[in-house]
Image 1: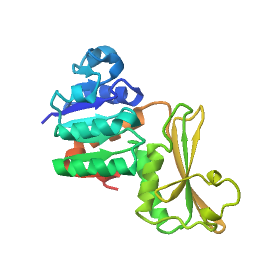
Image 2: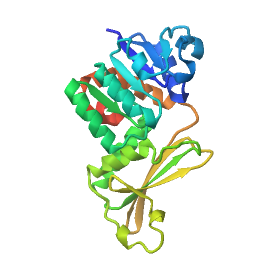
Image 3: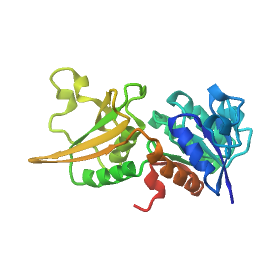
Length: 266
């Protein structure tokens, strides 16, 4: 069986790499794409890949007129939720690569997904090293009661924290909340210097040239510390294999599931 895929953000940095990789598979077919700038064109003409014969549309609503099994959301935070809800309304399973969705957004999405009996696999980062970071950090949090997260990205990234950092904080909240020696309310000086509290964890977002996406979590105990860090390079290639896996596995889920490890045997 060939899975029909609609890809929103198909001409972007990560989306274009994923589209070309889908073209090389035998079990996936990219039947429609969303990219406002190139609407009306054939995706293969834009990406230089003749095997991509699907048309590009200006909006998810238009693209979803072409039936698909899986909708992949790789656009921007301000349009992601609308696109996801539209896809679920059309009966598609959804893979989410866009960051910036809030816990409230995920609750709304989960409600509709369960009503439609469809799966949503949300991975702020599809890299295997991020899945491992999340797994190892969860194990460490069971033993070490204090930690903070540092979120690095390029100076052009508008959402903060990144989806990677948000997801990490969310995962840790399911284990426990950190126990700082000095409660935040007793901070002397500007409270903002202690970072933002995201799902119970303190997160510090750095936005500077030279970074792509990095996530670091530091655990501390008396006379010892543990640092776990993921760094990505300039290529979108590390995210492709995880995204392909998510597309193939999302139909086995119902409701919102967070992180690539939802479909990995870790």
